[in-house]
Image 1: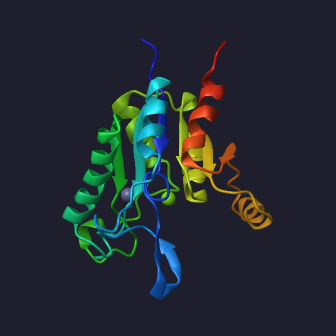
Image 2 (image 1 turned 45 degrees about the vertical axis):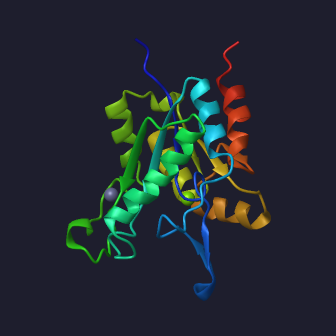
Length: 200
Ligand SMILES: [Mg+2]
Ligand SMILES: [Zn+2]
């Protein structure tokens, strides 16, 4: 049996929208299920990827619990909300892998310099092992260079969601994290990966 391949997905900024924290003037991950907005084309896109024969697996750093920004149960509720929206649209995930660690965690059991926290490749390797995936045939879609670095370290094809600007190009250069592909929105990954996996 040939191994399966996967499209790994970052969570925040890919499956759900980021939140603008006005008081801090920054954009970040949602911290409650109520705050979380699933991306408009998430279900349709995941369905499209599954139709290509990909396993779809979430790979995400979620240090908020460790930093006491939200409870573990709230994190579970957020993930449930995403999966409910996907299922409603006829799509589902083959796996979810979260790194809950943080080097400065306030909760002792999460305080760790681990290898699963992206940009480390640990979660990708763990998923490949457990789901019998060929990393060389797989893709990682994320909205941050941390995702690109993790993908490169694991040997998967990297796709960055974003818009190429002089600034982004410079940061990519400085961080030595050039993605294989850049697309402007999540739904664009279906035609891209269709083209890349077309073996005819
Ligand atoms: Mg992200
Ligand atoms: Zn970790």
